[in-house]
Length: 344
Ligand SMILES: [Fe+2]
Image 1 (cartoon, helix red, strand yellow):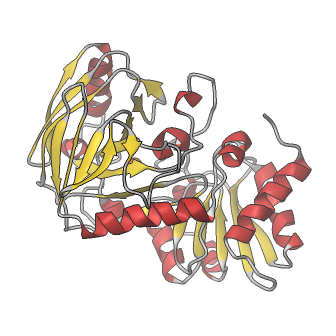
Image 2 (cartoon, rainbow, N blue to C red):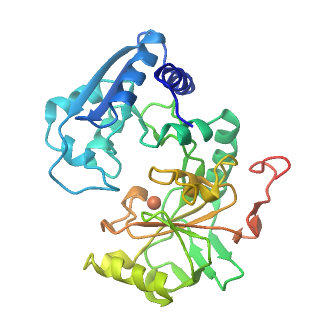
Protein backbone atom coordinates (compact mmCIF):
# COMPACT_ATOMS: atom_id res chain seq x y z
CA UNK A 1 0.00 0.00 0.00
CA UNK A 2 1.29 3.45 -0.78
CA UNK A 3 -0.31 6.77 0.00
CA UNK A 4 -0.39 9.78 -2.33
CA UNK A 5 0.42 13.16 -0.83
CA UNK A 6 -3.22 14.14 -0.23
CA UNK A 7 -3.82 10.86 1.62
CA UNK A 8 -0.67 11.42 3.67
CA UNK A 9 -1.83 14.93 4.66
CA UNK A 10 -5.22 13.58 5.67
CA UNK A 11 -3.64 10.75 7.71
CA UNK A 12 -1.32 13.22 9.45
CA UNK A 13 -4.21 15.60 10.11
CA UNK A 14 -6.12 12.80 11.89
CA UNK A 15 -3.02 12.13 13.97
CA UNK A 16 -2.64 15.82 14.87
CA UNK A 17 -6.32 15.87 15.88
CA UNK A 18 -5.66 12.95 18.25
CA UNK A 19 -2.76 15.02 19.63
CA UNK A 20 -5.31 17.81 20.28
CA UNK A 21 -3.58 20.36 18.05
CA UNK A 22 -5.78 23.46 18.24
CA UNK A 23 -5.87 26.74 16.31
CA UNK A 24 -3.02 29.02 17.38
CA UNK A 25 -0.89 26.24 18.86
CA UNK A 26 2.64 25.83 17.51
CA UNK A 27 3.76 22.63 15.79
CA UNK A 28 7.49 22.23 15.09
CA UNK A 29 8.49 19.61 12.54
CA UNK A 30 12.05 18.44 13.13
CA UNK A 31 13.68 16.80 10.12
CA UNK A 32 17.11 15.93 8.83
CA UNK A 33 18.32 17.28 5.47
CA UNK A 34 16.84 15.24 2.62
CA UNK A 35 15.29 12.52 4.78
CA UNK A 36 11.51 12.28 5.11
CA UNK A 37 10.86 15.57 3.32
CA UNK A 38 7.48 14.21 2.20
CA UNK A 39 6.58 13.61 5.87
CA UNK A 40 7.79 17.08 6.86
CA UNK A 41 5.72 18.73 4.12
CA UNK A 42 2.61 16.67 4.87
CA UNK A 43 2.79 17.44 8.60
CA UNK A 44 3.18 21.16 7.78
CA UNK A 45 0.10 21.11 5.57
CA UNK A 46 -1.90 19.09 8.08
CA UNK A 47 -1.01 21.53 10.88
CA UNK A 48 -1.93 24.49 8.70
CA UNK A 49 -5.29 22.84 7.93
CA UNK A 50 -5.92 22.89 11.68
CA UNK A 51 -5.00 26.61 11.86
CA UNK A 52 -1.91 25.88 13.94
CA UNK A 53 1.35 27.82 13.62
CA UNK A 54 3.88 25.51 12.04
CA UNK A 55 7.55 25.54 11.12
CA UNK A 56 10.05 23.01 9.85
CA UNK A 57 13.44 22.85 11.53
CA UNK A 58 15.80 20.98 9.24
CA UNK A 59 19.20 19.87 10.49
CA UNK A 60 22.21 18.35 8.78
CA UNK A 61 22.88 14.74 9.77
CA UNK A 62 24.80 14.56 13.05
CA UNK A 63 28.38 13.39 13.28
CA UNK A 64 27.91 11.45 16.51
CA UNK A 65 26.47 8.09 17.51
CA UNK A 66 23.51 6.61 15.69
CA UNK A 67 20.48 4.90 17.22
CA UNK A 68 18.72 2.50 14.87
CA UNK A 69 20.39 4.16 11.92
CA UNK A 70 19.39 7.69 12.98
CA UNK A 71 21.75 10.43 14.07
CA UNK A 72 19.03 12.89 15.09
CA UNK A 73 20.17 13.44 18.66
CA UNK A 74 23.71 14.11 17.46
CA UNK A 75 22.38 16.55 14.88
CA UNK A 76 20.68 18.61 17.57
CA UNK A 77 23.38 18.36 20.26
CA UNK A 78 24.88 21.75 21.09
CA UNK A 79 22.61 23.61 18.65
CA UNK A 80 21.19 26.01 21.24
CA UNK A 81 18.98 28.16 18.95
CA UNK A 82 17.41 25.02 17.47
CA UNK A 83 16.77 23.52 20.91
CA UNK A 84 15.18 26.77 22.11
CA UNK A 85 12.95 26.92 19.03
CA UNK A 86 11.71 23.38 19.70
CA UNK A 87 11.13 24.18 23.39
CA UNK A 88 8.82 27.02 22.34
CA UNK A 89 6.49 24.65 20.45
CA UNK A 90 3.37 22.96 21.82
CA UNK A 91 4.03 19.84 19.76
CA UNK A 92 7.29 18.66 18.20
CA UNK A 93 7.05 16.13 15.38
CA UNK A 94 10.31 14.20 15.57
CA UNK A 95 11.32 12.77 12.19
CA UNK A 96 14.98 12.35 13.24
CA UNK A 97 14.81 10.04 16.30
CA UNK A 98 15.79 12.09 19.34
CA UNK A 99 14.98 9.22 21.68
CA UNK A 100 17.33 8.68 24.64
CA UNK A 101 18.97 12.13 24.22
CA UNK A 102 19.28 14.82 26.87
CA UNK A 103 18.07 17.35 24.29
CA UNK A 104 14.77 15.48 24.09
CA UNK A 105 14.38 15.55 27.87
CA UNK A 106 15.05 19.29 27.94
CA UNK A 107 12.39 19.91 25.28
CA UNK A 108 9.86 17.81 27.21
CA UNK A 109 10.68 19.62 30.43
CA UNK A 110 9.80 22.90 28.75
CA UNK A 111 6.29 21.49 28.25
CA UNK A 112 6.41 20.54 24.60
CA UNK A 113 4.86 17.20 23.77
CA UNK A 114 6.86 15.13 21.29
CA UNK A 115 5.64 12.68 18.71
CA UNK A 116 8.20 10.42 17.05
CA UNK A 117 7.21 9.34 13.56
CA UNK A 118 9.65 7.37 11.40
CA UNK A 119 7.76 4.27 10.23
CA UNK A 120 6.62 3.73 6.59
CA UNK A 121 3.19 5.12 5.61
CA UNK A 122 1.57 1.68 5.39
CA UNK A 123 2.57 0.92 8.99
CA UNK A 124 1.38 4.33 10.21
CA UNK A 125 -1.97 3.75 8.53
CA UNK A 126 -2.44 0.10 9.51
CA UNK A 127 -1.58 0.66 13.17
CA UNK A 128 -3.32 4.02 13.44
CA UNK A 129 -3.97 4.72 17.14
CA UNK A 130 -7.38 5.04 18.77
CA UNK A 131 -8.67 6.23 22.16
CA UNK A 132 -9.63 2.58 22.82
CA UNK A 133 -6.01 1.48 22.38
CA UNK A 134 -4.96 4.28 24.73
CA UNK A 135 -7.38 3.12 27.43
CA UNK A 136 -6.20 -0.47 27.25
CA UNK A 137 -2.53 0.55 27.26
CA UNK A 138 -3.09 2.86 30.23
CA UNK A 139 -4.81 0.00 32.07
CA UNK A 140 -1.63 -2.04 31.52
CA UNK A 141 0.53 0.84 32.72
CA UNK A 142 -1.50 1.14 35.95
CA UNK A 143 -1.10 -2.59 36.61
CA UNK A 144 2.66 -2.36 36.10
CA UNK A 145 2.91 0.72 38.33
CA UNK A 146 1.35 -1.25 41.19
CA UNK A 147 3.07 -4.57 40.53
CA UNK A 148 5.74 -6.12 42.74
CA UNK A 149 6.75 -9.19 40.78
CA UNK A 150 6.48 -10.09 37.12
CA UNK A 151 7.05 -13.64 35.92
CA UNK A 152 6.79 -15.01 32.41
CA UNK A 153 7.14 -18.45 30.88
CA UNK A 154 6.76 -20.15 27.50
CA UNK A 155 6.74 -23.70 26.17
CA UNK A 156 10.37 -23.41 25.04
CA UNK A 157 11.58 -23.28 28.64
CA UNK A 158 11.39 -19.62 29.69
CA UNK A 159 10.84 -19.04 33.40
CA UNK A 160 12.09 -15.66 34.59
CA UNK A 161 11.15 -13.33 37.40
CA UNK A 162 11.50 -9.53 37.66
CA UNK A 163 11.23 -7.77 41.02
CA UNK A 164 9.53 -4.43 40.33
CA UNK A 165 9.15 -1.18 42.21
CA UNK A 166 12.40 0.67 41.60
CA UNK A 167 11.38 2.22 38.28
CA UNK A 168 8.15 3.78 37.02
CA UNK A 169 5.76 2.15 34.57
CA UNK A 170 5.53 3.78 31.16
CA UNK A 171 3.42 3.35 28.06
CA UNK A 172 3.13 4.21 24.40
CA UNK A 173 -0.17 4.33 22.55
CA UNK A 174 0.74 6.30 19.43
CA UNK A 175 -0.25 9.92 20.13
CA UNK A 176 0.21 12.55 22.80
CA UNK A 177 -2.11 15.28 24.05
CA UNK A 178 -0.42 15.86 27.43
CA UNK A 179 2.14 18.69 27.86
CA UNK A 180 5.70 17.35 28.13
CA UNK A 181 4.73 13.81 27.19
CA UNK A 182 6.58 11.81 24.52
CA UNK A 183 5.00 9.11 22.35
CA UNK A 184 5.73 7.14 19.20
CA UNK A 185 3.33 6.64 16.30
CA UNK A 186 2.55 3.78 15.90
CA UNK A 187 2.79 1.88 19.14
CA UNK A 188 0.66 0.14 21.76
CA UNK A 189 2.42 -1.35 24.78
CA UNK A 190 3.27 -0.73 28.42
CA UNK A 191 6.50 -1.51 30.21
CA UNK A 192 8.63 -1.08 33.27
CA UNK A 193 11.95 -2.43 34.49
CA UNK A 194 13.31 -4.30 37.47
CA UNK A 195 16.02 -3.01 39.76
CA UNK A 196 19.44 -3.67 38.15
CA UNK A 197 20.11 -6.89 40.09
CA UNK A 198 16.50 -8.01 40.33
CA UNK A 199 15.98 -10.33 37.36
CA UNK A 200 16.63 -14.07 37.65
CA UNK A 201 15.85 -17.11 35.56
CA UNK A 202 15.91 -18.26 31.96
CA UNK A 203 14.53 -16.71 28.81
CA UNK A 204 14.29 -19.05 25.83
CA UNK A 205 13.29 -17.29 22.63
CA UNK A 206 11.37 -19.74 20.49
CA UNK A 207 11.34 -20.23 16.75
CA UNK A 208 9.54 -17.32 15.08
CA UNK A 209 10.21 -14.80 17.86
CA UNK A 210 11.74 -11.54 16.61
CA UNK A 211 15.16 -9.98 17.18
CA UNK A 212 15.39 -6.17 16.89
CA UNK A 213 17.28 -4.26 15.60
CA UNK A 214 17.84 -7.06 13.04
CA UNK A 215 14.10 -7.51 12.33
CA UNK A 216 14.85 -11.21 11.91
CA UNK A 217 12.90 -14.24 13.08
CA UNK A 218 14.56 -16.76 15.37
CA UNK A 219 15.19 -20.06 13.55
CA UNK A 220 16.37 -22.12 16.47
CA UNK A 221 15.83 -21.30 20.14
CA UNK A 222 18.12 -18.86 21.95
CA UNK A 223 18.54 -19.69 25.62
CA UNK A 224 19.57 -16.82 27.94
CA UNK A 225 20.58 -17.53 31.53
CA UNK A 226 20.02 -14.46 33.71
CA UNK A 227 21.51 -14.10 37.17
CA UNK A 228 21.04 -11.03 39.37
CA UNK A 229 20.00 -8.87 36.44
CA UNK A 230 22.74 -9.92 34.02
CA UNK A 231 22.90 -12.34 31.12
CA UNK A 232 25.58 -14.85 32.09
CA UNK A 233 25.15 -17.36 29.26
CA UNK A 234 23.59 -17.51 25.77
CA UNK A 235 23.16 -21.01 24.37
CA UNK A 236 21.67 -22.33 21.14
CA UNK A 237 22.49 -22.66 17.46
CA UNK A 238 23.36 -20.13 14.78
CA UNK A 239 21.02 -17.41 16.05
CA UNK A 240 22.54 -17.61 19.53
CA UNK A 241 26.02 -17.46 18.04
CA UNK A 242 25.20 -14.37 15.97
CA UNK A 243 23.62 -12.66 18.96
CA UNK A 244 26.62 -13.48 21.18
CA UNK A 245 28.95 -11.99 18.55
CA UNK A 246 26.77 -8.89 18.14
CA UNK A 247 26.66 -8.20 21.86
CA UNK A 248 30.38 -8.88 22.29
CA UNK A 249 31.17 -6.40 19.50
CA UNK A 250 30.20 -3.53 21.84
CA UNK A 251 32.99 -4.53 24.27
CA UNK A 252 30.75 -3.27 27.04
CA UNK A 253 29.85 -5.32 30.14
CA UNK A 254 26.71 -3.19 30.50
CA UNK A 255 25.38 -4.73 27.28
CA UNK A 256 24.46 -7.80 29.35
CA UNK A 257 22.07 -5.93 31.65
CA UNK A 258 18.30 -6.38 31.40
CA UNK A 259 16.21 -3.52 30.05
CA UNK A 260 12.46 -2.89 29.93
CA UNK A 261 9.76 -5.59 30.19
CA UNK A 262 6.09 -5.46 29.24
CA UNK A 263 3.52 -6.66 26.73
CA UNK A 264 1.91 -5.48 23.47
CA UNK A 265 -1.73 -4.52 22.95
CA UNK A 266 -2.09 -3.32 19.36
CA UNK A 267 -4.44 -5.84 17.75
CA UNK A 268 -3.75 -4.53 14.26
CA UNK A 269 -0.03 -5.27 14.38
CA UNK A 270 1.01 -8.10 12.12
CA UNK A 271 3.66 -10.54 13.37
CA UNK A 272 4.79 -11.62 9.91
CA UNK A 273 5.32 -8.03 8.67
CA UNK A 274 9.06 -8.49 8.13
CA UNK A 275 8.59 -11.81 6.33
CA UNK A 276 6.32 -9.83 3.99
CA UNK A 277 8.98 -7.20 3.36
CA UNK A 278 7.52 -4.38 5.47
CA UNK A 279 10.34 -1.93 6.20
CA UNK A 280 10.83 0.46 9.08
CA UNK A 281 12.17 -0.04 12.57
CA UNK A 282 9.71 -2.69 13.76
CA UNK A 283 7.04 -1.06 15.89
CA UNK A 284 4.72 -3.73 14.56
CA UNK A 285 6.51 -6.59 16.31
CA UNK A 286 7.07 -4.52 19.45
CA UNK A 287 3.39 -3.55 19.77
CA UNK A 288 1.94 -6.91 18.65
CA UNK A 289 -1.15 -7.87 20.63
CA UNK A 290 -0.32 -10.42 23.31
CA UNK A 291 3.46 -10.45 22.85
CA UNK A 292 5.87 -10.23 25.76
CA UNK A 293 8.51 -7.64 24.92
CA UNK A 294 11.74 -8.77 26.56
CA UNK A 295 14.75 -6.48 26.14
CA UNK A 296 18.39 -6.15 27.07
CA UNK A 297 20.83 -3.32 27.64
CA UNK A 298 20.16 0.26 28.73
CA UNK A 299 17.66 1.37 31.37
CA UNK A 300 18.22 5.14 31.23
CA UNK A 301 14.76 5.56 29.69
CA UNK A 302 13.33 4.34 33.00
CA UNK A 303 15.71 6.42 35.12
CA UNK A 304 18.51 3.86 35.59
CA UNK A 305 22.25 4.23 35.09
CA UNK A 306 22.92 1.61 32.39
CA UNK A 307 23.58 3.69 29.26
CA UNK A 308 25.07 1.02 27.00
CA UNK A 309 24.52 1.53 23.27
CA UNK A 310 23.75 -2.19 22.86
CA UNK A 311 19.96 -2.44 23.04
CA UNK A 312 17.98 -5.45 21.89
CA UNK A 313 14.17 -5.54 21.76
CA UNK A 314 13.06 -9.17 21.67
CA UNK A 315 9.29 -9.62 21.25
CA UNK A 316 8.14 -13.16 22.02
CA UNK A 317 4.91 -14.91 21.06
CA UNK A 318 2.77 -17.41 22.94
CA UNK A 319 4.13 -16.55 26.39
CA UNK A 320 2.29 -16.66 29.72
CA UNK A 321 2.82 -13.69 32.02
CA UNK A 322 1.79 -13.13 35.62
CA UNK A 323 1.94 -9.83 37.48
CA UNK A 324 1.90 -10.85 41.14
CA UNK A 325 -1.07 -13.26 41.25
CA UNK A 326 -2.88 -11.89 38.23
CA UNK A 327 -2.71 -13.75 34.93
CA UNK A 328 -2.13 -11.09 32.26
CA UNK A 329 -1.13 -13.10 29.17
CA UNK A 330 -1.96 -16.77 28.69
CA UNK A 331 -0.16 -18.47 25.80
CA UNK A 332 -0.16 -15.18 23.89
CA UNK A 333 -3.75 -14.18 24.69
CA UNK A 334 -4.51 -11.09 26.80
CA UNK A 335 -6.66 -12.07 29.78
CA UNK A 336 -7.81 -9.00 31.82
CA UNK A 337 -11.08 -7.54 30.59
CA UNK A 338 -9.83 -3.93 30.54
CA UNK A 339 -6.90 -4.73 28.22
CA UNK A 340 -8.53 -7.30 26.00
CA UNK A 341 -9.99 -6.74 22.56
CA UNK A 342 -13.38 -8.48 22.39
CA UNK A 343 -13.19 -11.68 20.38
CA UNK A 344 -9.37 -11.99 20.74
FE1 LIG B 1 13.55 -1.01 23.70
